[in-house]
Length: 433
Image 1 (cartoon, one colour):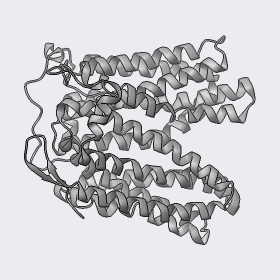
Image 2 (image 1 turned 180 degrees about the vertical axis):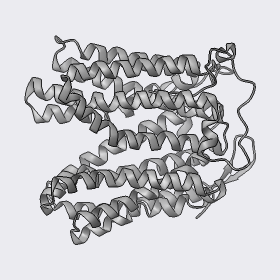
Image 3 (image 1 turned 135 degrees about the vertical axis):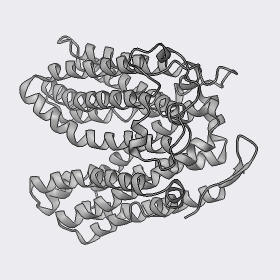
């Protein structure tokens, strides 16, 4: 798991708070983000962490199946990557603001490394393997929320923050494509426990990069006693605008995952080849990466704000093409277009960081991240359940209808909450499409 912060290169300043966040250049772009030295450490740590997560998911799933020969337990191992996020994000969210962010990030990486090391012990029973998988997922939202909040310190709250968040998402999508391929190759050369050793090393590398390459900053809520546990969560969600923005982050992935979850059954239903199945699995993340790169490179911050609602509410409309039971190429086109609408997230990030008070930013980011992971698990489970009773193409097309209605409702709520008192006492407006 990666994290944000200042410099490395052996300078004494790496252990102190930098005087001020960097100023955004006149024409910011992705290159400008990489000019911030601290972000480069965060980015590389993110690469290590992602590689570890993807390889561990694949290796642990294979290991559990080898030990039990149970498809149910094997699939449960993968599902456990989603389920604990809600509990961990809710109960531990306050840690993101209560302790110095660098310490939180490094400790989370070390906890994950320790869990993976225990997985490599041959005597570890399957029940403990699953419990350790839950522990990794339990701390994950705290790590990601803390890192997201700290990015605003590293890059400022303006356009560089938005582009930095976008880069980390782009890398995450690429890691899903490359990581599973690399993990598959790795598992042909080493046993699953050997692959887990590689995962432990990647977490340790991430922790080292974050410790040496990011600045020591005080706890975000050091000036006051933050609400703990559920009380703090309720305090965040009482703000109508923040709540509406969170819902807008959560609704799209709830429905977006349906075609991916049903890709294999759809391939079987339509009789397409294994190569076509690979095309269906890749189309959505490739579309997401393309949309974000274009929006981040070609559009101004104002333009990205204007397209938030139009792209969000049309995000799953391409799934309606499944109604005609399309072949692999047309289905992949629909998934690519749906993925490209994910460019709305750049504008949504800017709205979110502006809406949340700084002293609660870590908690809010943690809750938002936990919610996004949780709804993906719910979406996958719901898709599988629906496909037990209906043809797969009907389920995906129905998702296009139901998802669009839910997104329209979320957009209406965001509009209604668009003029509220900001933390500086001024009136802020959510840009409309």
